[in-house]
Amino acid sequence: MTNTKLYDVVILGSGPGGLQAGIHAARKKARTLMLGRMDNSSLYWAHIENYCCQFTISGEEILKTGREQLRNFGAELRDEDVLAIEPDGELFVMRLESGDEIRTRTVILATGSSRTKLKVPGEKELLGKGVSYCVDCDAGFYRDAVVAVAGCRSAAAGGAVALTHFAREVHLFCEKLDVAEGLRRQLDDTGVQVHEGVKITEIQGVTAVSAVQLDDGSTLPVDGVFIELGAKGVLELTAMLGVRLDDDMKYIVADKKQRTNVDGVYAAGDICGPPLQMAKAVGEGCVAGIEAATYAKKQAEREA
Ligand SMILES: Cc1cc2nc3c(=O)[nH]c(=O)nc-3n(C[C@H](O)[C@H](O)[C@H](O)COP(=O)(O)OP(=O)(O)OC[C@H]3O[C@@H](n4cnc5c(N)ncnc54)[C@H](O)[C@@H]3O)c2cc1C
Image (cartoon, rainbow, N blue to C red; front, side):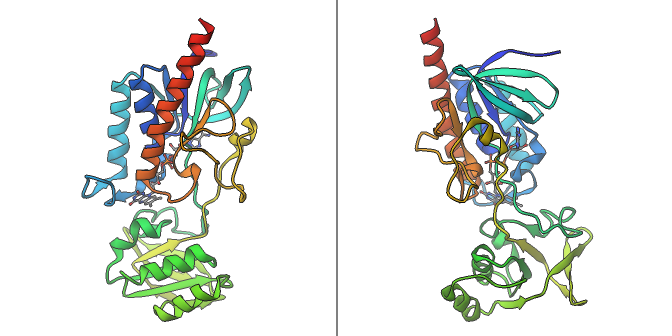
């Protein structure tokens, strides 16, 4: 059955950015709906130890608490994705996975940024158990360990250099290193072992990463694998709305009020670009939630 209910604020994404946006919008008494699957949030598999006022906490725990908090403030939550979205006068119409159609005065895009995968066996199974896409987040877990980094550009090379502050041995695997001379020198100076022309073909381990299989036939025992191929933008929905992206077509351009170039459309979190960190997603979500609720209220007052 089609649901054509009108919301003040609809949030695409149920990660920390979306949750914080929802909390602030609902607290301002806006009719708020948050969409998206909890276990698709990058935070779901993470263990956080760099978030203010928490020593260590699992991402899953944060997300579960956030959802409960959001419901308590009167927002609706639906565990489904948006398939299509288009402007309809001053409103927006969305089609959901379930086939339902909804209308809203404002949209907050908080769909995160899916990281480019290496696409080798073991990568998915060992995510959060030694496989990571974020050196800044997880380097501290690899003190005195042996780690591999996959990638050819500055994200991988810079990540490998940063890892040398923690790990005992850092191996960088790339087809052809493509970095500035200064960064290449840093790799030498910090003792990163660069394996140019060698690819990781499998990540091995049962409960945690134990080794990488390489395409030259050898196996290297490691404690962790960092995949730093750059963040891939999943921004098809923004194209439907005409939302402006940055020059690399990866991230949404938003101002200090988290407004995009389209009236009534806001963005928050990883989808707005680095640093891809929870603290930033939460801060931007707060601003987007308040701004969207205020915008919706003014629109409704004009109509009354
Ligand atoms: C292994 C790992 C470890 C990490 N460790 C840390 C750390 O220690 N500290 C730290 O600060 N950060 C860490 N991060 C980064 C952190 O998880 C992200 O910065 C944060 O989750 C971004 O929040 P977000 O709300 O922007 O996006 P996400 O949390 O990624 O949420 C995106 C949401 O959008 C939804 N979505 C996607 N497409 C659609 C659609 N079409 N319709 C509806 N919903 C959609 C998804 O279902 C998901 O709910 C880590 C990430 C990973 C992967």
